[in-house]
Length: 335
Image 1 (cartoon, one colour):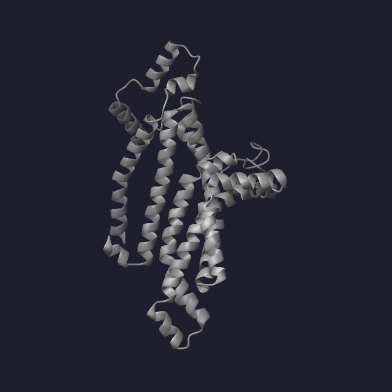
Image 2 (tube, helix red, strand yellow):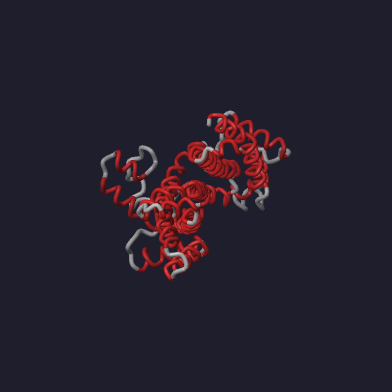
């Protein structure tokens, strides 16, 4: 197992290097002049040229990348050209919001998906199976921005059941300990803040949970059906084992490996792909920071934000591989 983990860690090095190149090239491919976007169209030519020199935009691309990579290796993400604050601090302030929303969406989507998938598998071919399939297909097909705006309009604007934007009602009034609103509310003994945070979390979390729920449901159904048709299941039933025990110990238990994979992939996708949801609900996470930086062409912030999101995705996938190898020893020798 140690050798397997070591091999996976070694593969991280070229992967991370490739991610830095992709983030750098993506930013440089954005249209427009970063200096003009930051200073505005009315800035003088001298001011624009001075900022370009400061940002190193006049240097050849290989040299720009080399300086960027050298900064990363030294642990310095640089300073935002817009806010003039350290980028590491800005990302650190925004990342807890993204993690909190992603984990909440996963806790909603995955249990619902597993329940729906297994319910559908146990009634394969029935009207209930067809209905659950339609629900999953619709959930995965509706664009996130359509679902988010619809939920926002219906439940926040029309019915006024939930807040439309933000993480808490009075932003800045909460005591910041970890940056996670719910955890900070618990640590500071603020049940009112905890309820307020949960109230604000519902709509964005449900919006973000739709796709994980649908994907998990389809994988859970397929895995459950595949296991239920294996010979050892029929043998167990023929020996007189209770159907409930067979379902629990032989079918549900053995259907977990593919579910572990899809859950890990969905967590990585949520952490790195909740940009649209964060912007719809004014969540103030890392995705919102990346979008606002794209508007202002704050190159270093965009590069660092994209790199952090991609790094999270890669690390989650590596963790999934390790967990799967732990569950199924055959994977250790196969890779």
